[in-house]
Image 1 (tube, rainbow, N blue to C red):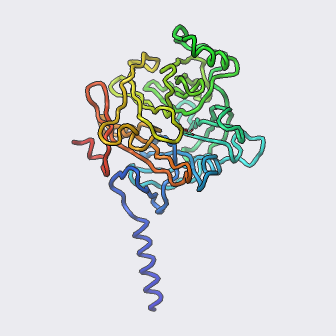
Image 2: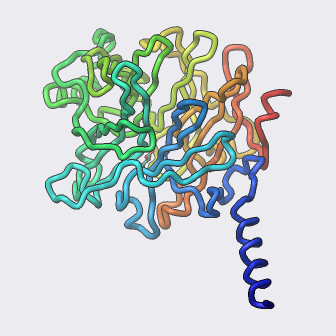
Image 3: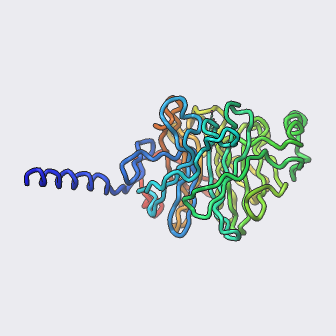
Length: 355
Ligand code: GAL
């Protein structure tokens, strides 16, 4: 009987531990899923589907090897943005040596969007073929019928082969070299983002031309490829980690400088159209730690459902010596006229937007 009672007590203790109800964001701290395991979705993005948020990100493992893809893309779901259910691996790396997404490749910054026309979930990510460092600079594309997957790898590609940008006249002589080098084979794709506009058109935003210049490229109606229409933006500014959001008809951009895993000062910009002109607004971060984006790098800007002017900056605090320990820095975006600010918070919740 005694044994039974202590077993019951243990069970109750575990149940309590697992049923923890998180009510605040604590940027930079360990963030446990509903099973009590630190969330493993780095360089992530978010999809809101049927009133549930789905967080997709790089599954990292321990040690230096964790900077390559050993598992795939991890998915979590949540109704409230604080408590996350582990939905498992949405896209698995492959053990087939001829696959582009062979275990040991570099698969970064996955983003998923839903195509209401084809009823498919479409994932894009930055792909570096196994054993080639960061020289492949390709976009990977995968597709699924169900939001949590399994996602099937479709192909990998360079961007917009053979196409000239809409703003071709702005091509300066010093960047022409890189651009022309990749014109026929396709432009480089490194840090990347997807953005779906109100009219359902989707765009791929990525660091290109050896990271010197970002491209914004329109996707086809299926979201599985490029139409060939694109612009080059922030020429020679070496911007990475791009994220785009839209508020009151204006487009906003958040990104970083180009210093690898080490944090640097964030960048921001605004434009009246996705095609530009993009005007830089400087570092959106304010206060102590602003010069290093509070030890983080942007990965996504999340519009909060059902709240006006509520956008969350999602960033990664990378730990390349032990990637699985990477932390998440989520902070509220605060608007000032036509620009915005990001300020550190030790702890906060969505009530912030009701103030
Ligand atoms: C960062 C980039 C990461 C990863 C890293 C590798 O600048 O944002 O996604 O590619 O470099 O050093």
